[in-house]
Length: 233
Ligand SMILES: C[S@@+](CC[C@H](N)C(=O)[O-])C[C@H]1O[C@@H](n2cnc3c(N)ncnc32)[C@H](O)[C@@H]1O
Image (cartoon, rainbow, N blue to C red):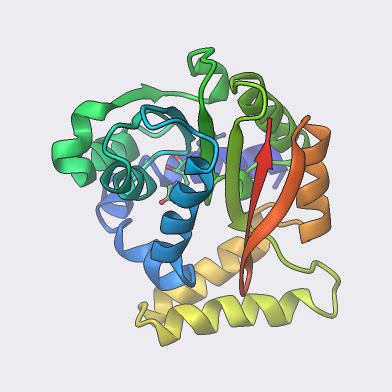
């Protein structure tokens, strides 16, 4: 399957109401330290973003990072972009009383307002994109930021050499099992990541951010198969 077809497959999966209804239970079992990743993301953005910052959130479906940032930073407002309508509907539900501070846009980065924004995030999303799409998306995020504004990206990123990749995929699955995820779901997720997700090694991920025009790219989060970086536009 081509990388474009894989990306489409994932958008379709996030548009399936049955899968979306179970979404919120997934990331916390699969992503080590997810709540802390959200907390650190808010802290890193706040180092440079003003008290009343407007934040671009790409891949905003489900609303988990939006909720965490909205709770921690009561004057921030957000634009949340995602191609999957059911994931945006779930985000609206997750946000509860904070919903009014978020403008949702169904679509991709090119559908986002031009900004310029005070900061941006893209969590657990860029790994679905091929290298050229990822680079283009990262550049389009950077273009929507004020000069020097912070960007936090976090997604699957781990050594891809044939002697290391299978072991990391097994650790990914083992973490989810140890966190109480359904064994059949874990097995399917491991196979899907292996076959369809565009995982790169951390060096390539960092290079993509730099080539997209970000500076000061620095790793702040590393948790089994996941990495997170903060960078400046
Ligand atoms: C695993 S979810 C992550 C959602 C949320 N950021 C989180 O951390 O819980 C990935 C999301 O990315 C969205 N997505 C897929 N391709 C995208 C793209 N090219 N641009 C923006 N979002 C995309 C999906 O619809 C889905 O809602």
